[in-house]
Length: 121
Image (cartoon, rainbow, N blue to C red):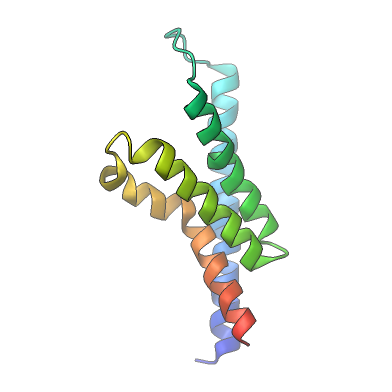
């Protein structure tokens, strides 16, 4: 298979997958707006910072990646890395959450790979 074909397959897989992930996050976001949790728990500062990087940073990265794949992929990956450092590792959830990392940040990984392939071309 030609390199051009591989790049095209990776690009469109990442784009379609990113649309699905963005729609999923919009459903979750609107769910929280219309059905907020009522347990009275407030967010800690670290959770607010983590929320800036994930999902906000990850989704912004995926959107940017539609035009600039390498940059968007890096933003998405860094956003999820910071979330992992701030939330998942301290809670000991990194192994349990790894499948979610691959599913949710799969488009970011593919955008990054495609951006690197495009630079080498």
